[in-house]
Image (cartoon, rainbow, N blue to C red):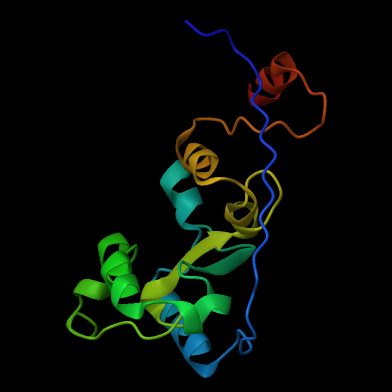
Length: 159
């Protein structure tokens, strides 16, 4: 058995973000209203963890990054997003035979709170995918907040 320990990773990404349009397009706003109308405007992760549909501090994450819209192969993206399909829109009569051709399609949206989107330590944009999956499924999120924090301190905070 491996003894308890803190694992630390230092990952640096260098990413060339191309010139892109503004985020708040008419289509984006139309589909945010649609999510609200359909009862899908809540933090998906909080709902997964607690069963509560909370919509405070909510942000809409583009599963296929908005800034890379002109670089994305939308045929592949359509297959991926149809498989993931958090809200079931891909299977609806309205969308089932329509390919996704841009980032502001409702099927590319994932509503999550700021905590799980952009906050250091728990945010999707600031963690590795393996840690993000743990954040979604662990009973208590085992994040080390302070440099030098011990495993015992993290365990105490988790209780």
